[in-house]
Length: 129
Image (cartoon, rainbow, N blue to C red; front, side):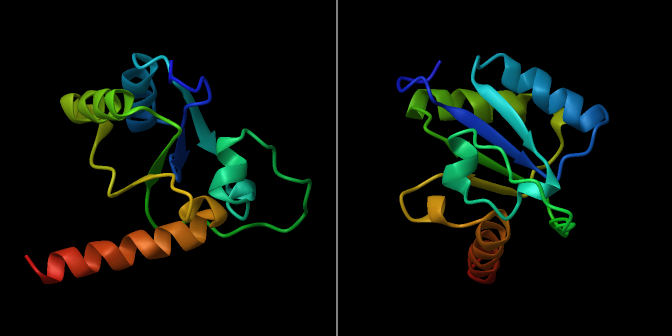
């Protein structure tokens, strides 16, 4: 478990199936809580999701993200490295294009804002490659 006892791994835009099962099985070995975030919760902040808050009841249908994203919150460096190694070691986990660590800055963002920022960073990195 994480040193704070509050470590959590948030999965966004993962549908049930072989990849989701492989990711869950790999991350199970970390003994860190994994949460598949439902679309209705995408408007909540990353900090709220990491604190395990539930989304308010709403009839408004949130739009789906256009990419898979995984967010690591409140993990030690060792826990993060182990989780990433487990994901990489199992080809069935597939390529998860967007990964982030919750920070003081991005914990105030919702899933849409975080994904947009990650896409900007990816574009800037690949433009310099």
